[in-house]
Length: 454
Image 1 (cartoon, rainbow, N blue to C red):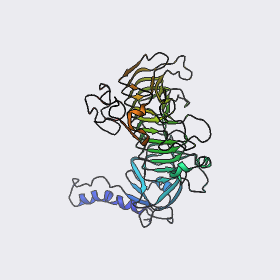
Image 2: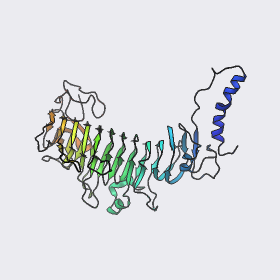
Image 3: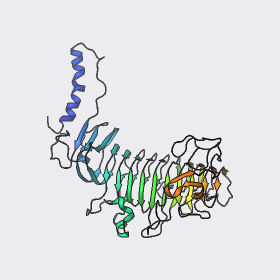
Image 4: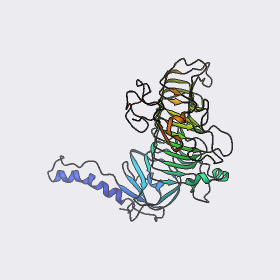
């Protein structure tokens, strides 16, 4: 028996011999053991070759171990102290997920993490950014390619540079050096949750079906905060804050989606079942003397969008597009709060619903079967057809929405007493809970906007 395989073989021996032993002893099959317990193994980049995966003799190469056949579904790989560099995981597929996480108290750092043609992996609690002086190897720091599925990134900290938390002090040269995307999941049934990103280009992106982007924080970005292109994706409870514009004028978005055709090109096909709820998107929090603040669009979606739900979001932005969707069929835009991050304005930001024509189509389609209700916004625009196909209920449209809230400059977006927002919504369509989970309504009718108060 070799030392390398000893933990795996030792764990399987009872399954192999115990049934035979029970039969020999007359115990029959009633006492057969249950499922084999998952194994916990250790990895260290400083370990010598030939380890057995124990804490005293850990394996050395994380990517190689995952494809070696020594790891089974349900196992855990605990990472010991060290610099792991750029980790690229190849073909590693498990029906039950395998957890990869630091050992308790371990200081673990990756330069980047890519997953290719893998399935059933959970990466949790990792810190990822390029080390100072290291040659830039990737355009996206954390990536699960399209051939992968059921990949989960949880509680990661991702920075464009080691000093990413200090992005407000960066010069243009610093932003250019740190120009890398944060997290990108391209395969189906994958998740990014409870992760924090600092000083990145695009924040968290998903292009596969049934993506879950939940409770993430994107602080300091030079592109789009969030993206999701796949059917039945969920974007919930995220905070996107502090957008910069360093070099060229571009349309930075807090959240963006667009439909793809069968050829993979934009403006073809349909995005179905997209849910965007309970998110806070802030162009900038705090003093506005910073030289690189962008003019951020809130939620911008383009293509054919079927069965769309956008509810309980806060958008503090200064561009026209607060919540804008082209080509919606079957949609609900409910109880969102939109304010202009730079003070009173005319129609910015608006809720806009417009027609769209797919690439190569003979004709386009306007918004159909869309309900817009209980929103606070600077304007509601419904396209050239005058809003045919759009039902408007209980919205409040004013030029200075911030004046109706408690303290929006410091992140308190609750309706102010006497604002006219409390108990003023339409209860027939309001979500049952507000942005923080408070039951709605607390009064006779729901409040307008994302928050419900007494």
